[in-house]
Length: 303
Ligand code: ADP
Ligand code: ZN
Image (tube, rainbow, N blue to C red; front, side):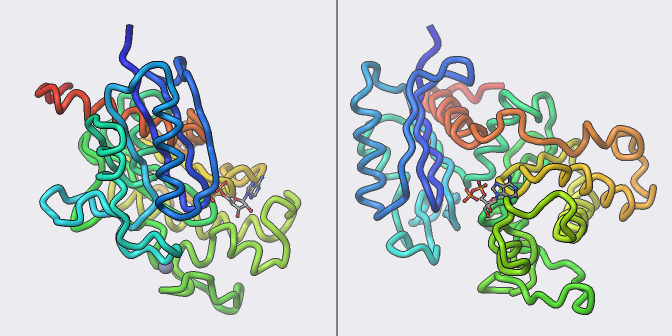
């Protein structure tokens, strides 16, 4: 029987926890709003302790910024977040002490990317990007088979884009940059620019071609810098009917035939795709992180 793992998708709005060995074997799930760190992490620990079977390992896919450097004294912390009460929260240590098992730790979007690599739209790929467009915009993925880390971790949501102030006088909502990608194109930017929430903007609304332009610019930049074998676009805003298709068109138009790959020139519907695990990518990614943590602890570097 496959061992069971504990997965935690630690979001700034809500936590989703699951006990599972994979997408077809989810034994229990729960979700609750993100309140104080003590209360929220405490609720997750109680949920796992209530289960009949103790997990073999745990995984956390966390909102950030997070410290992913194992040599750093604040490894496993949520660091400088503006979310009240959560700056300098030692989340990895709290879960390790709470459950007494090995714990894997990643950014929320790298976690979701790992889930897609293990069971979803990025199976068999070693270089791909996962971008989520919701309350924030975050990006991650793998390069040459490893989750992308470096100096810290990618902050694709904050890339700078050309902004035509005449066509779009909206200044953007990012507290750091104003009109970075996230500032121009997240859910709150749509609401602030158009005066109504993103889900109520009809399919013919001029919001969508503009949204597709910004997302298309971002994806074209990512294609040029990282050469991903596929780009996965998830998050609440991508639920808007027809938006993914508009983004595909923008990417082709912006690249203008320069990147000579059949995937982009002819097969873009299969190149820019939705997450195959849907909104379960994050928590299943946390399960995949647990699986790796268990394997590493057993001394097997795995495949
Ligand atoms: P979060 O980023 O908070 O984890 P989501 O990824 O669900 O959560 O993103 C929430 C954002 O997605 C909100 O700004 C909401 O307005 C927007 N959204 C949700 N559903 C839709 C939809 N069907 N069409 C367009 N926007 C949507
Ligand atoms: Zn920004």
